[in-house]
Image (cartoon, rainbow, N blue to C red; front, side, top):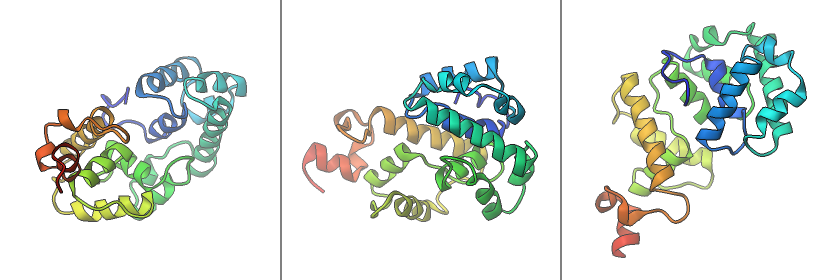
Length: 212
């Protein structure tokens, strides 16, 4: 993320990042976020005062720009009306309550909430995006379940107790798993022959060597 050099980042900006440009890659999402910061701002008051057309123009970095604009306005309304434009105090609550607060916002489920809690250094949880989750399933940490939510919960249970508790290590693990899933362990046509961990990967052994 373009602004993770800050310690810690604003949780509201992380929510905006997730919604600013639907299905945009990281580069285009970062460009859209930078334009929003420069031309409108990320405070709820600034977004609510913006023209829908201006927000939609930024959302053109992805698909369905009008939907992205509506999501940004919805995010701003929720932050303004329910959190007095500042989510930080909500993240200081017990973990279930902090996750519940974040899940009030568009596109934020358990994985997104946990990522925000990790990156804001509110709770040392091992957040996983779809790329990281796919990697851990393929190497054999846990079997894929009937739906994404069940798979996410099962993998989280399987890795519980095996990870360090410091934020730097967990953030680094999240980023490495995500990058590996994007570049090599792709959803379709994974590059197993190029993967440095294929010998210890259930999926890789089957794809490369034809054995389980």
